[in-house]
Length: 437
Ligand SMILES: Nc1nc2c(c(=O)[nH]1)N[C@H]1C(S)=C(S)[C@@H](COP(=O)(O)OP(=O)(O)OC[C@H]3O[C@@H](n4cnc5c(N)ncnc54)[C@H](O)[C@@H]3O)O[C@H]1N2
Ligand code: MOO
Image (tube, rainbow, N blue to C red):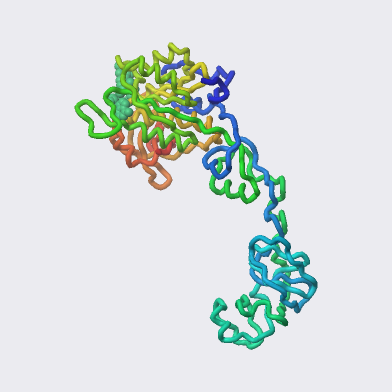
């Protein structure tokens, strides 16, 4: 296993560490974000970098637009009217672009390169073509109703059979705008497409490609392994006597993905210390999440194993209900361990309290604005302990869903978020909200 900074270890800040067995919830949540550092940047094809975070700025390498081109369908004209039509330019590649002399025009499509010598593009709507009368057979090839005039059609593309007829001319008045998009007028070479720290969205990726950028430098997404402990836990099928179905693989996958990480494996671990020890020692991901084994029972070996491995305890117990046995530790080689209580709702609370902010920092994600809202309803409060309850949006407030228990996910199932109610909370006062995955 490689030491920092490959695992985003934060050093030498030891001031933020605490072994307080019951750290206040806001402190634990903030510490999980602040204790780590973003993983190193590396080159990534921008089209594969969605959700990753830029470690370096993106600068334009090809001007936008890359060549002078028409902003409207119509005629590229040179000099003063009338102009005799010499050809047709559609968007696409040209080995050699014909040039226009004063008094000449070429029919042109939006996006086609304008010929050298062009002074303006005259949209069809503002141009009048004169010459051979429009015949009935031509009318089927003209999009829309034909002009009744026998010598001109205003605002219509030429039909195929009309094109390049000798003697045809176009006239019109160039008013103000030339309808030519000039090379680099949107973005010049070297102009900033994005500063570092931005998440690569589909829009950002599209803008980068438009600016000629194929590769970007992004923080390596943190890798996560989930170790699901418990002899009684099964991953599929109908539970037999004393068995339960695993609740954590799906939840941890969703939270990891949302935070910019990658869950590379989920392994079931029997309640046996040597098996868990071997799993801890061979797991090479940046983060190891352990569900269950967080408490004081005869089968709860995680804390002993981590202490034996000289782990640093950053969080070891949080003053919240449910979820108080959660923990965040760091192995000497820089791997992070997040301990989720086995009770599924308590484990979900812990994943949102410690795992998500840790992963967001490792992924280089910018700090999110804290989400708060007035919370309505009732909840049982305990001194010096945050009560964490499922809520649904009710206008600009969040309303408490009753009936949540540490072990049951039923009340959270229809919730939008968890509200973290401080011990001093009273109905209609604001609380921190954690959106549910
Ligand atoms: N003497 C004490 N006992 C307990 C304490 C305590 O402080 N002192 N804390 C209680 C609290 S609070 C919680 S939460 C749990 C935490 O237990 P563990 O993290 O050690 O987990 P287990 O004992 O293995 O399991 C607890 C419970 O959760 C179920 N479970 C476990 N894994 C899964 C899973 N992947 N999917 C679904 N359900 C799971 C397991 O069957 C148990 O019912 O400890 C209390 N005890
Ligand atoms: O706090 Mo436990 O984590 O009640 O379920």
